[in-house]
Image (cartoon, rainbow, N blue to C red; front, side, top):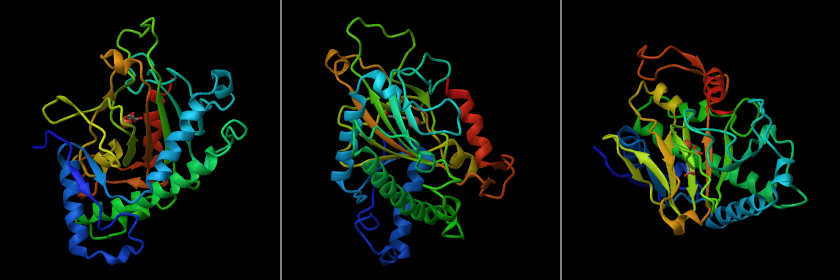
Length: 316
Ligand SMILES: O=C(O)CCC(=O)C(=O)O
Ligand SMILES: [Fe+2]
């Protein structure tokens, strides 16, 4: 039973390998087996040697930082509308509770959905739009590489099953987004609400999440013993986890693990902000999610109906 977060090495199948067909089935299966073992136990892994350029990762952290540094009135010009179909824009401090039983999360965010993008702070952060689009494209390609290993590890007959279920990523008919999170330094007057966290404990909703963290740390993941353990940032690694829809799809074989970011206890960390960037992957909205093992553990559900249900519970 895993009590720590395993590392999965994509050296043989990262984006630096331009030719996807170069890898042997046996090598892909080896990566897939490690991936599935991680999702079967703790639900999280670190993917190293993924090939997303480090420069681009630094750039998206940089432009996000510039955006969050803007005055609140400016950021509010780009606020994400409450309507859940419009998943693009600025999410203000305490606007959502990832654990609905807690006060609003002590964070800000900016969501980017390519097919719903309407506004960008082009005047204030001119490079933001381009960098987000480039990063989105890289994450999409990486997600497909991970899905190839995934289907191999699950021994699915149709090796393109997960690619085909997500074929509209970045277009209408798919809700995959980039979310950049900003957890500001804590107020000096200590005005944190009872029970408030930087990010309340939750599992993600969709099929899979790619998470990029800065070096500050704070993400914690619940292991099988029910203990939260730190997901300490590994330089250059992507922290990958599966969401509830993937758990349902695999009839609970794989785990959508709860995770959280607490208010830090140390004075040093309280005075520091923290950044993370997530690529939340969802299947195409018209996909009917039916248990892959052929069981009837869960009723088939339309991906879009599932997502609407989950959003209605968290977005205040
Ligand atoms: O900031 C983090 O490390 C985690 C954020 C997260 O879990 C989320 O936005 O779903
Ligand atoms: Fe999450």
